Image (cartoon, rainbow, N blue to C red; front, side, top):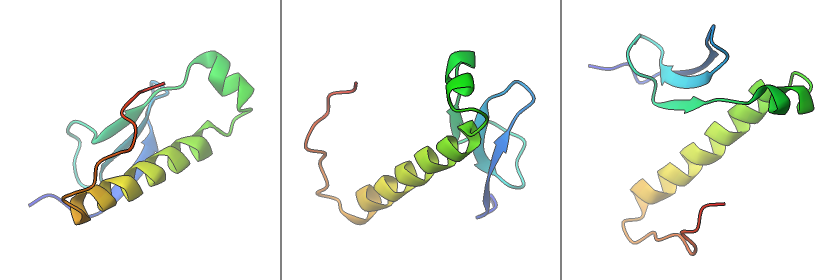
Length: 77
């Protein structure tokens, strides 16, 4: 049974991932910042990645809790 615990980790290749704490398999979420973005964020890209993952998990929880949840806008920018 997969671990219920998740962790956010920056990998050696610079990608920030959300993965199960006991699993070395494929991450659940992968966030990759360009060099320009990392420079712009002045070393705070991990904080931004944590906020992005947190917001995504909150929305995922709403979707799971509400079968009738439909986003107002499906346009990706």
